[in-house]
Image 1 (cartoon, rainbow, N blue to C red):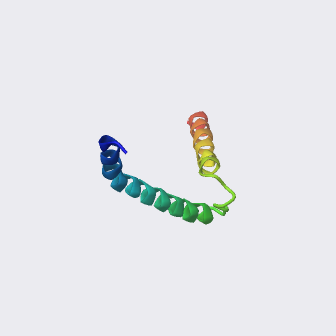
Image 2 (tube, one colour):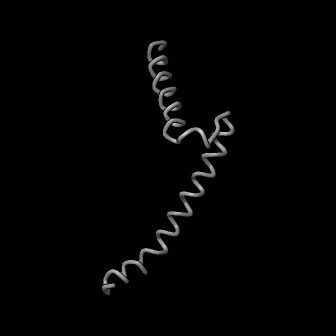
Length: 68
């Protein structure tokens, strides 16, 4: 291994561990939120789950503007 590559690996390892830990925590929190709303976090992707909220927000804003 070259010196710069070894240095890169040594310097990036803590950041990668931190990112991995944050990603794991985010998925644990997603599982709790999905469960709260009656969704199975194992069967529902984060993209599909949050798309529901995005669609609701868009429709709510449109409806709110119509009623104003």
